[in-house]
Amino acid sequence: MQRARCAAFPGSRPARTTTGDRLVRASVRLFAVTNVDDLVVVALFFAQGAGHRGSARRVVLGQYLGFAAILAVAVAAAFGATFLPEAALPYLGLLPLALGLKAAWRAWQDHREGATDEGDGRSGAGGPGPLEVAAVTFANGGDNIGVYVPVFATAGTGGMSVYAVVFLVLVGVWCAAGRFFATRPVVAAALARWGHVLLPLVLVTIGLLILVEGGAFGL
Image 1 (cartoon, rainbow, N blue to C red):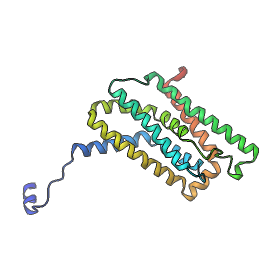
Image 2: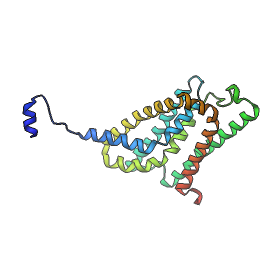
Image 3: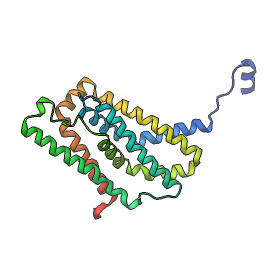
Image 4: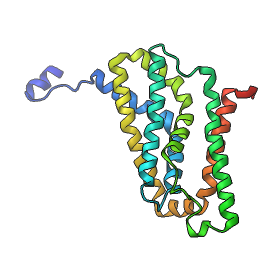
């Protein structure tokens, strides 16, 4: 039947799924599953920097720095090098926990000084800095490393390159989606009113979850 169909339409060829296509699809699925929670954090970072020149670039730069660090550790581990012992991963929760407490302290100070209404206290330094975003991205993706390592190890060098390229492209897509959500009128209004509370709450929650789920400090 297939041969007859091809004979009837000489220019047509049966669709084939190449190894590259399968790798790209697998990469997209893996990234989406392991980074869906990061979308909320990205949106909050964009909202925190709203109205500050260059803030969006700093968020995007921080996202790429953080995820590049995740990829570097995962690739190194796939080749047998251990730069970050598995036992140390749970303690990455201290990074978002500390940043969340810092953001909460800043929000409390702004509220006490009445600076929030003027817009200079909610993100006094012009929104989040790239290293701050990178630290949260890396800590929040620490558990992703354990998922990526066996996948990278079995994919080989070529497959690993496909995963890395697709992941880095999708980081940009995630940033665009986060900014899109943060700039929708309804969402933007809610984040403008409650973002200074939500960001510390989300960061502290992420930090505690990483610590507890990883069994850090015997938790």
